[in-house]
Amino acid sequence: MKDAAKQRKTKLYDHLKRAIMTLELRPGADLDETQLCDAFELSRTPLREVLRQLSGEGYIELRENRGAWVSEMSYTTLRDFFLAAPMIYGAILRLAATNATPAQVIALKEVQEEFKTSLTNADAAARALNNNRFHEITGEMANNVYLLPSFRRLLIDHARIGMTFYRPNNTDMKENLSEASNQHDAIIEAIEAGDENAAAQLAIDHWNLSRDQIEMFVTPSSLEIPLGSVSMKT
Amino acid sequence: MKDAAKQRKTKLYDHLKRAIMTLELRPGADLDETQLCDAFELSRTPLREVLRQLSGEGYIELRENRGAWVSEMSYTTLRDFFLAAPMIYGAILRLAATNATPAQVIALKEVQEEFKTSLTNADAAARALNNNRFHEITGEMANNVYLLPSFRRLLIDHARIGMTFYRPNNTDMKENLSEASNQHDAIIEAIEAGDENAAAQLAIDHWNLSRDQIEMFVTPSSLEIPLGSVSMKT
DNA sequence: TAAATTCATATTGTATACAAGATTTATTTT
DNA sequence: AAAATAAATCTTGTATACAATATGAATTTA
Image (tube, rainbow over all chains, first blue to last red; front, side, top):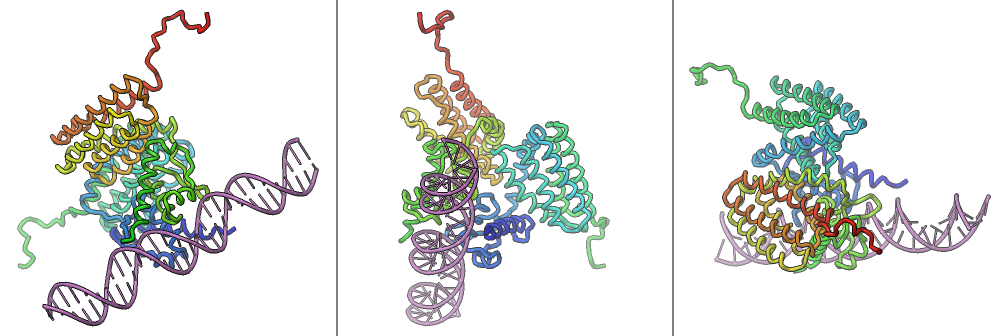
């Protein structure tokens, strides 16, 4: 059995996805072919195929004779994100509530358990990846080839946004996370009950919570300094 | 200047997209690497990169050690299509009405003129491609990275559905087409006026018309044979 | 010294050869 | 003759060598 090379290929593929979603590879980071070849013991041919695929899925961008970069994230994309996300995810959860198989519901519950345990741990990356997996499963449940491309693209940046706008030592943020976990539970319930309207509403709530998190990040909670004490001297 | 190979590469890429959308390459058709290499004077390395990219965009599917196939179309996907299309296209036209640049509006009008002329010609493929280009431009206007992946995927099958469910000698079909052209004009108007609500409504109307066309195909107009004349003998 | 040009180096793109896997044909066995 | 096995063939996947392009350093020119 000599599929060792193929294993290395999928390993590279998984690694890059993971590293990009967790911001280990930052938006705009340059991907060096020879370096990756050495690291994953692959020749450039299969490596370049992986890069093409990742480009198709929106993780990276390729430019003629200029190599590969991790897809950028700007404030413009943040706006675009919150325009598209509630609509797409609403449709995804609606369909998930209609189509989910019992096996898929079990898988979803399992991932949610893992997500919950990763809440207590400090590892933000593991949390983001579990959260990502949770939503990916709802996408599989929805099972609509036309919605999935955009949904997958959204999930990439959802993970990256989560990593960007999270302060672990902020208590508001922690509460926000446990609320997200509660919403996951409610989503599971709605899907299991086949209640598509509830599921669609939860999708919107879930993104609103996500937006709140960003607001918390941008607008920190008041430092409780009364008016009149502006000057640092005196 | 020795970018001849690169030209052949994009030529292959364009050809495959075109051939798939016009059903010259039918859903499920097998893509033979060596055959394509010969035809486009390319080695397998760049060819396979093109295939990976097309796979990412939803034109074809790749399976390990089994080569490439043109993406399938089933009745299931038809249902999925009409579930997703009005929503996505509604959002696309809404954003197009908000964001379109004057240059883009000019481009859209040009393509619409070409579409109109292709209505009188009998060439269904040219018509489908012009129609496709029209909608692609609206996608460029909307300019939202999260919506475009699904929108592009929809457009592929929109072209293929149009090619499948069209009977050129049916007068109802012809009327349907000229109505589609009128809707294009209305879409241009709404975008130019920045009227996002009108644009969003037109998106829905446009898909309803598309669905009507399929109904016409499946349920042919009555043959006007009176009751009692069923038997062919006598 | 600053700008422009040339040369050297590094990176990306393509072709070909070979390896691994799938498929078909031929042979053997029952 | 039908099923099962083995061999040959064809297709897909990977590695490497080379070509083309981009980048950066060194040199020249003003």
